[in-house]
Image (cartoon, rainbow, N blue to C red; front, side, top):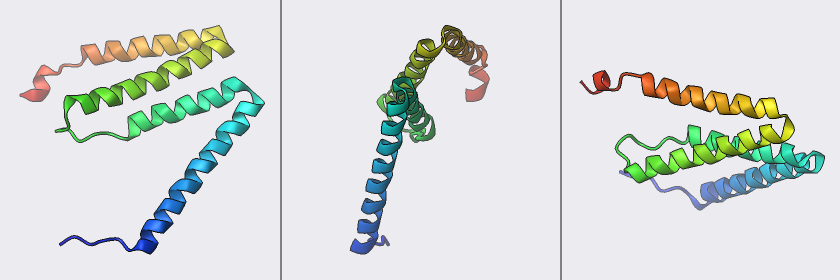
Length: 115
């Protein structure tokens, strides 16, 4: 048996989503007014967080997992670019962390996981 949501609950949820979106937009605009890189890095952090936190189901099509990987790549790449714009050594730290993550991913034993 499925339960339908009342129109009042849907209106409340819609209002909550609108207020959340306008709040995030206000924060990004304020940070962008302080310094353009601050606003951009906050936006990229949000994109990276959404890519990491919104995980598709394991039986989802490969394209969904690829889209998630792309969102994470855009977010991390944007953060690394912001780091280079602020301080070049911070940018190289971001690049080194990405290389380290790929190295750890390649060295994990995936054959024993399936058995």
